[in-house]
Image (cartoon, rainbow, N blue to C red; front, top):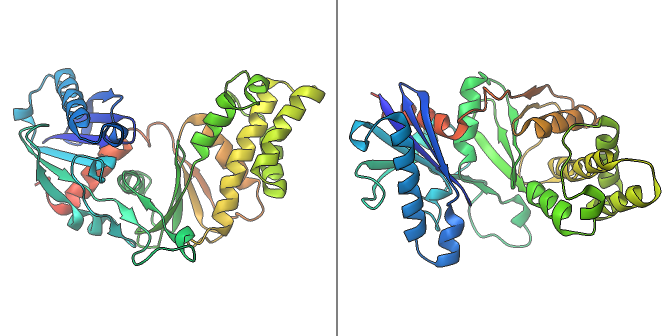
Amino acid sequence: MNILTIDTGTTNTRVTVWKDEIACAHAARQVGVRDTAITGNVSALQAGVTATIEAALARAGMTMDAIDLVLASGMISSNVGLREIPHLLAPAGRRELAAGMQPVQIPEVCNKLIWFVPGVRNMTGEIGLHNCESMDMMRGEEVETMALIERLAITEPALVVLPGSHSKFVHLDARQRITGCVTTLAGELLHVITHNTILAGALDSDFATEIDEEMLLAGARSASKIGLGRACFIVRTLDQFTIYDRSARANFLLGAVLGADLLTLKNSSAIRMSPGIQYVVTGKPILREAIGLLVRGDDFFSGKVTIASNEIQADLAGYGAIVVARERGLLG
């Protein structure tokens, strides 16, 4: 069976062509729902998704006529995507996501039905200052989580860590259902602090490229004790008055930002955290290593830590969409 998966985020779209659930061709374009938000219409997004599909098909040596099933996930189903599909209310697992899939015809994009996988949100009802911290939502991470559950054979409660521009922490119960998530701006903060603040000179406007465990843990401790803002400024102090080199300073900053995320996990009402829960960590190699070290080095966390390999996390969104579609019965 030939399947085409579309994964659209805020700034990028990725398309993968699959033969019998094995990825055989990829294409990506810098186009996402941000384009819709800026322009006020979906024309640029439609054109970008179409171009990405055509590029992936060309690399696979196929035409759309050879595709049996088209699946879409991510921000493409948001109010600034190609078609808004309402979030499912947590708890939601593979069965609920499959039941919530919706087929949509968008001739401007392709001549096949596109099956959209819905996102998941924490709660419903009126949101105000009294409960807004409990609210969170995802579009795209739900299929990535379903892929990890299958590839890693997760059978116990777990916290899935998906670091990025917006880092996402997804809580799973014993039935492998998403019971909630919490989001931070860790990646964006790290980028802005490194490139667009007074710390740019102390960091040569660059991130840590290898782990310095001592400085990483020191940064995390600093953020948890005196706050992220003050911990960040210490990077300048280290530059001006100590012998620590650029790599050490970058590790201190990385530890401070990621340490603030651990503080979120301990105190957020958006997810029901248990110190002994197992952690499944994804992301770029240096982030995976850093988060693993910080979790293991924090007395609050006592659960097993599983670091996903590059092979495990390859094509997560597309494979997760296939997992959900299989549950729906779309794979025959």
